[in-house]
Image 1 (cartoon, one colour):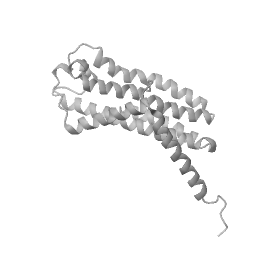
Image 2 (cartoon, rainbow, N blue to C red):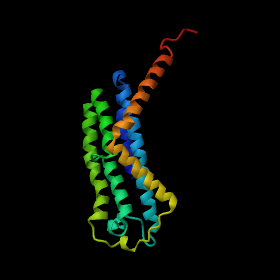
Image 3 (cartoon, rainbow, N blue to C red):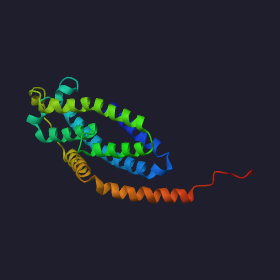
Image 4 (cartoon, rainbow, N blue to C red):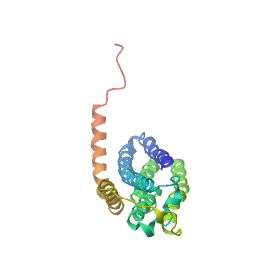
Length: 204
């Protein structure tokens, strides 16, 4: 998850570069806002699960084996983590997929095809690491997770529910948020254009 944040920052920088093209600025800003919103839900949710699992580990170090067979012993938590991992990987029709779709669409409009190709290839590579967690939870025989006593406090339960609902909503009806951010991007862009100071300064 730590290295994941670096790669997702890279995707956002593609939108920053695309925003340098005046005709694409609004699309890039809208795509960036959608991506940040989706990333907020899936990253907070994934870290919440990681913290809960980590606190349940009594002996030894916190490692990927702690997720082994989690779907059998704690199906609700495993399902939430699987949703977060699938969305982080950008697999359709998740919120993460639409986030990357909007970012890459803006980049294509800005003639940044090389960056888009690199971004897509890196998404495929990163999918291996995300889906590995899902495999451990659902396809590995139960062993490590069998001995975990996981306690979900009301606060963590609320966080997981909010993140799950947010990801599902953005994945099922992404257009609702995009309409809002599109309108906001156009308004902000117009305001900035009107209030921007002239480039030429006087000798004084």
